[in-house]
Each structure stands twice: as C-alpha cells, then as structure tokens.
Length: 485
Image (cartoon, one colour):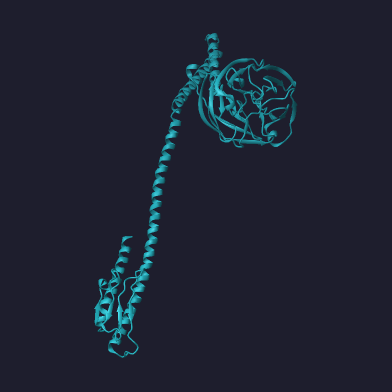
C-alpha cells in the first residue's frame, strides 16, 4: 500500500511546482513589468501571492493560485481592455502561452482523474487486505479452538475408556475360566466313554460328584453372564401410537418360548380393563384384542405381568393384587405396610404413581416410599406367590424427585425427570447396599414418559411416551469373577 500512496504524493508535488512556475515565469515571458507582493505586504498572511502589471490597463494581469480542495491547480488571467491592439506581438505570445497552459491544465486534469482512480483502487485494496487479514486471524483462532476442542474430546474419551482396562483384564481371566470348563467337560466326556467300555475302571461316585460340581459352577457362570451393569440405552423405537397421555404396556418375561402376548392398560386410574393382544405383530398392525375386566381399578402405571398373572396396586390404597388371567380371579392380595398411596409419594409426573411394581432377572420388586424413610425411595423384594416382603433397602433419593425407575440385575436405576432432556443418573445396588451417580442419556422422543419398565427376557425397556408405545435396547457389561465360582 505504501508505493501507490508515494506516487500520489509525487503527482501532487509536481502540480505545485507547475503552478509556481506559471506564477513566476509567465509574466516575464510576455514582457510584463511585475511587482511581487508578499503576504506581509498585502497584510494577509497565509494567502496566495499575486503578480500585478505596471500598467494594468495596457497589459494582462496574471495571478498564481494555490491548490483547490481536491488538489487541482487554479490559474486566473485578466485580459487587457478591448481598445488594445489585438495584433500586438506580446498578445500573440501570450495567446500561445495560454494555449500551452490550457493543454497543461487538461493534462493535469487527466492526471488528476487517474490519480483519483488510483487512490480509490488503493483504498479498495486496503479494505480488502484488512478483510483478508481479519479472515486469516479468524481462521487461525478457529483452528486453535478446534484443536483445543479435539484435545478435550480425546481426553474425555480416554477418561471413559480408562476404567474399562480392568474390565478387559477380567474378561481375559473369564476367557481362561471358560476354556478350563471346556477342558474339564472334554475330560469328563472321555472318562464316561472309557467307563462305558471298561465298567468298574473308575470310581462312579467320584465321577458323579465331579459332574455335579461342574454343573453347579456352569450354572453360576451362566447366571452371572445374564446380568451386568447398565452402560448404554439405544434411541427410542416407536412400536405404536395409541391411547391417552398416560398408560402402560408389557409382555410376560416368564412366558413360554414363542409366546409374545402384549398387555395394554390405558390411563392411570379409574380403569379396570386390560387388553390382551396375541402377539407383538397383532399389537403393531391391528386392533384385534381380548379384553379382561379386573375386579378393582388400578392406580398409577406400575403394573407388571409375571408368569401368567398381573400384579397391580388397587386404586386409593396400598393394596397389591395378583390377578390370574387363566382363572380370571384374584389369587393373592397383600398390603404394602407403611407405603404411601393416592399421590402421597408419587413420581415427579404425579398420576397416583406411589407404588411401582417391576421384575428383573432376580424376580418381583416393589418401589415406593414411606414416612419412616422421609419420603425417600424404598426397594422391596417380594415373593411372587405370597407377596410378602423378602428383603427391603432404604435409599437417600426422594421419591417425588424421580421421573421414573426400573430394575436390572438387582440394581435400581432412576431418571432425573419425565419431560424434555432425560437421563438415567442414579443407581442403587442391592447386592452391596451402595449407590452411585451415573450419566446415561435416555431419548425422550415424545416429551413425556409416564411408564418405564425393564423386561429381562427381551433385554429391553418398555415405555409409554405421551401416547406412544416405545422400546429401548440396553447395553450391559457382563463381568465374571472367578474367585466367586
């Protein structure tokens, strides 16, 4: 940018020199006897200097000029009176000089136009360069920010993966344990084959005890493989859109293989009709169902179907009822002592959800709250036949602050809400009577969850989401500890 500006300065200096030359040389060329008036003689400091002829009436009057506001040269020439002879030689010379001055003036104007155009170009280029400089600076800053974000993301990912190292080490040990089981089974198979060929060669009782021991260890191993810690929940899978804003739906985790009946209950109170669909396909594509009338209306959305019977909380009471679908009769009823009911200790969304019944790999559970536990969640393991409490655990989590909850492998998982952004953030482990805060996103696709239950057979969460029946697949970490086998 400095070179074009230097050119402009040279042009302006040249214009000033030409003006000065005209003011000093032109009068002498035409023979005018001039007298130079200084600024002090005229009494006007910092003004233009004029040149006057000795006899103004007989000669031309030529004045110099300073540059105008746009930097152009301005010359003023006063012609003599009309009576003077136009054929005077000096007049002819003056006319020629005037033509030269006019030509120079035109040249100066052209030069001035070019200079102004160059100046505008320079200004435009200066703006563009400043814009480019700003953009480069922004790119550099964004690059630094992106690098910082990527570094943070990688660091966070490493922090997530670091706890998995001991888990992977345990998996290696588990693989060796399974290989050991495989070798023992092969040895026993070989021994049994030889026993058939040579009866009495081995001690039968010793061999039988080895088989029983191995069977028990394998059963324990399989039971541990079926359970694990919740580490992820898939996006919501919409199965059907039906019913009101609140309700529950489920399948029987202990149903025989091939039995995929769906049970559907619309609303959370003053209703006693349960729909039975023959299969999941019928539920998704048709309205063909069988209706079962319960002897009492249910309360809340915490019902569960388990081994051919439905367990529900009787409306406006703390009574739990077991209703057998085959006989259409109540097979057992039992009060859940000290538990709140009728919107005393409900989930955050309300709906008479004081008592929530659920099942997992370990059996039947009841989730509720009591005055004795200051309204915090109580977990009770129930006997499925007698409905008696086998064991209870008291937690420090307020019942009314929970959006929903579900059991997986003896651990209660609680959500932070029922609308908007939802996540599973609290877990209570009944096997160790300890709790922890976690952070697992739960997609709340339709903005209002009024029922959330786990089915151990399907390894899925069933949810009622604002008139939509949805499923979530879950991810569990399976850890086998060989020292416990």
